[in-house]
Amino acid sequence: MKKKIVTWAILVIPVLLVVILGSMMGFSFASTKTNKPVLSDSTSQWGAFLHHETIPEDLEKANPLVFSYETHPPLQSYIDRNKTLLAELNVIDVASGELGYERAEDSKLMMGPSNRDASHMLVDIRKADWKQYLIESKLQSLLLRRFQGVYIDSLHEARELEARDPKRYAGMVASVVEVIKAIRYQYPSVIIAVDYDETLTPQLLPVVQYVIADSIITTPDAIARPAQESMRALRLLGQWKHQYPQLTVLVKEQWNQDDSKGQADLANKIRQNGFVPFVRRMADPKVVLRGK
Image (cartoon, rainbow, N blue to C red; front, top):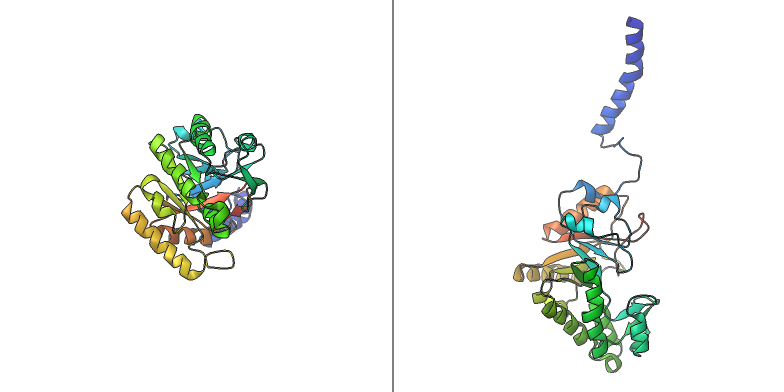
């Protein structure tokens, strides 16, 4: 009997010591998978923009959830869990095969390839026919799918078009703003999110619930905003949030999916400014992108 106990002790005690030491040093033996974003381990709010037919496990707790119009899971179960579900609504470009493409083509509303995505065609939002279609048909189709609102990320592109060729694209910005305000007027309960733009977003603050800003916390580089511009964006977003209590500011950043500590630190910096971290995840679960 003593021999069995000694043998058992020789086999088990080293294993227990490894587990205890591993726990003290922060190792996890529960899974051999690559570290996931800290979303699933946090009770704080996160938001996510997904291109998935099923929501990745580590993003199940994210709220609000923004989906591509073309790719999304069945929505009812997430509605039952009180998720806020938004669909991306492109108002000045459209992809082949996307709802509205044939309408824009038949009505001769297309203006050439989009600079944002070569697979998309620019559509002249200044035309009353396209405005009516967006508000009365495309938005309605999203609502019928059980989306509760839309994310319109066309402010930058409209402004850049006008800046590049003021004569040809004059009125694009005003038309985007007009469409967003018309959506609010005709659909008072629809949730609206727009992207951050220093000059255009202020015109929309009374009618939107979310502003999504891109790369205002991470170290500035060739892609992100210069440091001075980032500081200005932080200040403006803080002022807007204080002025409009209904407003939630979501911040997209460059999330390193293999660095849980770095993600947590970055998320804390975002929250310290009163904002909500926001992840954009493409269909490949290993890829995390900053967004458009």
